Length: 223
Image (cartoon, rainbow, N blue to C red; front, side):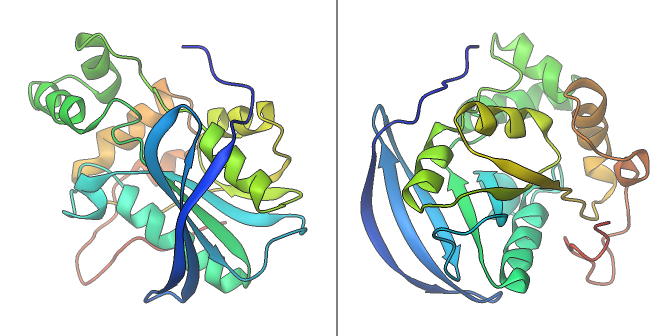
């Protein structure tokens, strides 16, 4: 799948203040040309014109973020990133509506069914005739350009996300690992990310940690 390398025009559809349990964000709903999906930007502080702004480009995961699925660490990563942005005083969460690594909710659940039969996350997509990862990041680049961010520190374990943003003209000054505790159900998910999708997850982080006694996603273990 060929990645876009140009930034499309952007339209702001709505904006408001959003108080959260982590802190207050300015929220923008936006679209980009050629993409009907409504994406969100959560902005804390004043990032315009600044360098090394901490940014999380996060793709939607309704199963993990809304329903608390233990098959992935998406909800914990989002929570951790929001905490880090507020801790830094300035930063941006870009929430892209590309469920299931871009294959959509229906195909994601179909892939889950194949995983129940023994396929890993990569092979499940391929059995459905779908790409391993169909996500693109031109919407994120368009918003960062709109906000006037000069360079970013990107919270991610995925080197392909770094490369995709750089190809779109975003200066990534540093990569911040996103390492959060997970339960045993997500162990294989993380191992496949590391071993087959080349995510930069240390082996010790792919070993499940207990989620008992109120343990949740945290950036406390981030190096």
